[in-house]
Length: 249
Image (cartoon, rainbow, N blue to C red):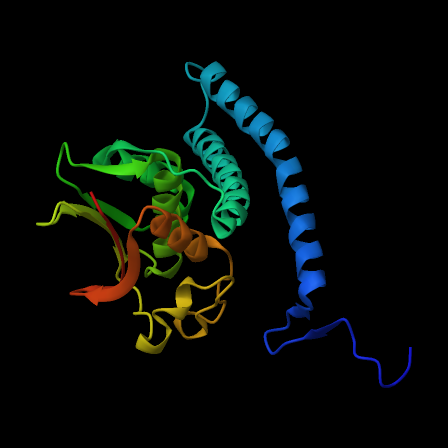
């Protein structure tokens, strides 16, 4: 290779490889293929864990072993959800995902998001409060909504104080739209980063030394916008970071 030839890839300040258009497309396609192939073994793993839970339901098993099995099941379910999110993100970006809106009970949605994050709640010893009126519903794609709320709760747990508080809330607004919130008592998102945080792979370095990176909030933004809604982050009272999702009727 000559000295004048430009490299196909270089490293940016974050340590990531920056590829040209063709390189990015090839990498994205490879990721989608690998993720697609992960779906079946993860589903089989989750099925076997559920079978173990049923078989051991009446057995003499220590509390530690039972909790560990519950955590394994929760984490396998979480991994399967992440696989679905990666695949759906590609379809949402292309505008190919069909959003099927039905009446979703928000109290039940919050309960499922809490259950899916049981392992993280236990590890971080966080108190999770749910403030959702009984019977409140919203017109949502049930699968997308469940994963959005699951991601927001996971994110809240990551940045909550150890032994701190996470609050899941929802309320009907005067114009018929619905507001869903997930907040924690951790540090606020800096004002300058409150829009950029929803970008692909964005990291909020100021919130924690071991900054988290991933598609979670980017997927949430795409999924909410596919409903014609909006997502933002703000500070409310004792809660340093509150993610606010607003969806139209």
